[in-house]
Amino acid sequence: MEQYEPDRLSAAQVAAMRRSFTNGRAALTRRSLLRASAGGALAVGGLGSLSACGIPAAGRSQGGVPAEDRSAKEKTVNFSNWTEYMDVDDSGKHHPTLEQFTKRTGIKVKYTEDINDNNEFFGKIKPQLAAGQDTGRDLIVLTDWLAGRLIRLGWVQKLDPSNLPHAYANLSSQFRSPDWDPGRAYSYVWQGISTVIAYNKKALDGVEVKSISDLLDNPKLKGRVGFLSEMRDSVGMTLLDMGKDPADFTADDYDAAIARLQKAVDKGQIRRFTGNDYTSDLTRGDFAACVAWAGDVVQLKADSPDIDFLIPDSGYMTSTDNLLIPNKARHKTNAERLIDFYYEPKPAAELAAYINYVCPVDGVKAELAKIDEDAANNPLIIPDKAMAAKSHAFRSLSSKEETEFEEKFAKLTGA
Image (cartoon, rainbow, N blue to C red; front, side, top):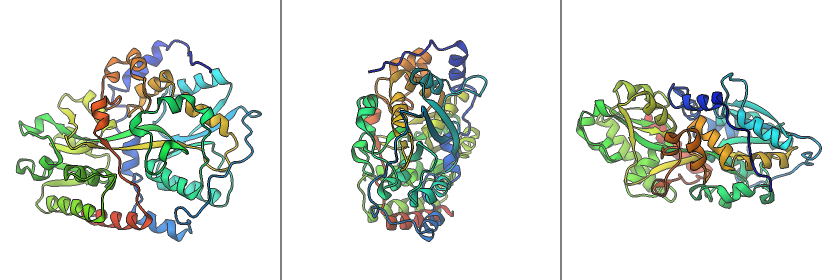
């Protein structure tokens, strides 16, 4: 088995990685940009447009469809990803880990940042996938709900475990078997996204916050609380606070969570539901506390000593962005080798040091500590066992549920 032995990191690379924690590079992080564009969930309008475009119902298609794998003859792989979701050197023109992969394997990576929104990207690739055609991409990154949809539609290829020894061995246990891809037959995690409670210590002025109940019920926080415009995060955190499992809840449970949030809206407890703009509310003190994304909190804490976070005793929500190989991709083996590369601890650490999201790779902490010890000890990047045990995922929804639940949430938020 090939071992990854990259050249020693240059001082410039290390400096660039360290800067990512201190200069607010991700003031609008990849995840924030996604959420702000309402890409984190199928919007009500988006659901309608899927039906109108004739997308087949989930589960009606057969399994993934391969093409002739040209990997042996064509040493290339076409990789589509989100913006600000890959390590970059000082010049902003090179991706060190991708270059290391090419140096070791001889496989050139055509890396394209052409995913700005899940729905938008789905619309871009849907015609080819529905027609059984090549999208021109060998590897794509999609958020869990859309990854699950493509798997159900039979539009992505089953992965070959023999090409993924590191991925199979090193995938963190908390991400191993989502209900939309049990056993990770079709996908592997690119990065994890944690939803936590963030707060401004100065704005709290001694008010204690430990739970979602404190956000919803403490009159001292009236008008100074924020929730997210992403349904799965805000409702999921509320369900947890109510003692319900977001991975196994009923329609009545969902309605009860909506009613609880509606009560807080009606009495003026919740100031507003936000996308990424909660970051400015929090730093200004307009929000004393809010539901937040951990990738943002890493940046906010670095920039302001007043900002911190907590994990409620009831737990927190976790979602993932995932690597998939679409049908008819021409370089499947090369794509699998690239997936496996990012499950080796050293390249995984370099990536984690730069982008600040939850690293899904076990054994990465020691390598990350060589680059940035603070990052290695940050539970928002490398969850310890206690934190990982508190993570919960929102269960997959049927098409009917998705429409109904999003409509109710949109009514709540005024969207």
